[in-house]
Length: 198
Image 1 (cartoon, one colour):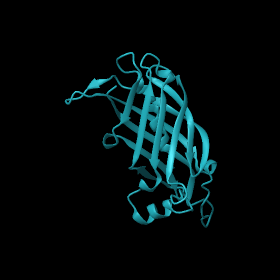
Image 2 (cartoon, one colour):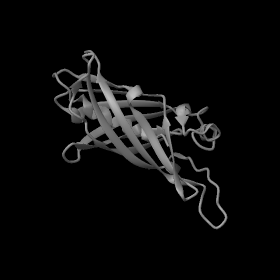
Image 3 (cartoon, one colour):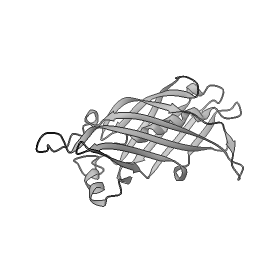
Image 4 (cartoon, helix red, strand yellow):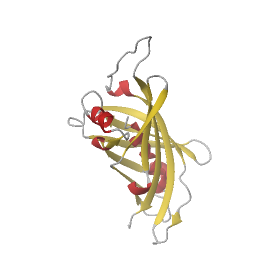
C-alpha cells in the first residue's frame, strides 16, 4: 500500500535547480500527499494516505539523472478515515507495523520519458520485502521563489503495485465469487519540495 510513498522518489528530478553545486531538496510534507487506492468488494475504491513521511533528494543540478532519492514513510501513519479499518491495516494481516515500522524507497536510476516526464526506478521495501519499482513522474515544475525567499518545485508520481509481491496476502472470499480486497494498489504522490541551504 505504501507503494504510494515510493512515488515520492520522483522528486529526485527536482535536483535540477539553480547552481552548479550538488543540491539537496527536502519534501514539504505539509504541502505534499502520499496516497493510494484499492478495490473494495469489487464495486468501489477505498482511498487512503500516509501522513508521516520524509523525502530527501541530493544531486548535481547539471545532471538531474544522477540524483539520489531516499524516502522513508512511517507505516503506522496510514489513514483511510476509518479508525477500525486503519487498525486492521496496521496489524499482521497487512502492514504489520510492529515488525515493519517503516516503508522505504531508494532510487537507482532516472530516465527521461518525454517532455516534462521521467521514469524513476528504485528499490521499495514494504512489509519487510524489497522489490524494484518504477515511478512515472510528471514534472518537476519550474523552480519558483516563495514569498519567504525559498526555492521550491513540485512533481507528481504514480505507480501500481501488487500487494502480494510484498507478502501482503490477507483476503476473504464473498458469496457468489469475488474478494473483499483487491490485490492492485494504485499510488499517487503529489510533492512540493524546498531547496535547502548548501
